[in-house]
Length: 287
Image (cartoon, rainbow, N blue to C red; front, side):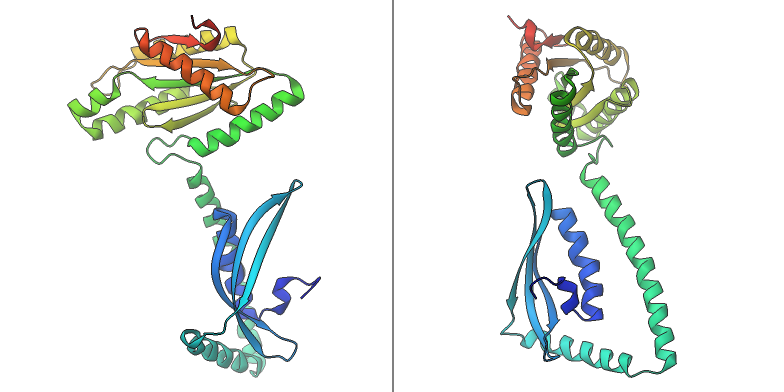
């Protein structure tokens, strides 16, 4: 097997299964456990195996590391193996009519493969989207934050982070119920999205907290923008309710990391909460 692609040892059926399950699953979850396959040995005999795989990055490149274990207890799989072998024998012994069927099968496979690509794209989008609000989720935010830090290290362009928290949100849930609370979260999400630039990252951080990454935004500009958000939220009814928010801001410095930046913004948010709520605090202004 050294120096050869793993698919060169697979039958047509196993290749179809491999493309349909292994590649999409490992792209989505980063690992695959116990795929049952059979390899074609040099003796033309099928060797049943279990395959585990994991996606890893080394030196900036993505590798798929796999471990293959030969199946020694395969009674539960023998029926499937015999049926697959019989179908393959019939397929390869067929006449021109069977070849036409193969061509149709190949066309159908290409269609299914494209459908699978589309489904995988949808799944990837779902994996980065908050189901309740439709905003980006915490995972997307964290990936975007690292990307903005990398851009800062190249360009030195400043960017700022907002953490926005709904004041007394628990009271809304306790008084009006969680469905109303969900409507408030969705309404605030739409407002934040509408007020943001296309380059801004707007995400739900968790619970009633939202985060914004504002590229090319200095400390002073960040304060003005945050105050605009705060005032707009206060003036915008959420159904029959009016809400206020507290906002914490931090602007990235060369000595910061993703964790220190989040911590600074979180401390600024706590300052806003403990000093009357419905206010904006930048980390540099805490006293």
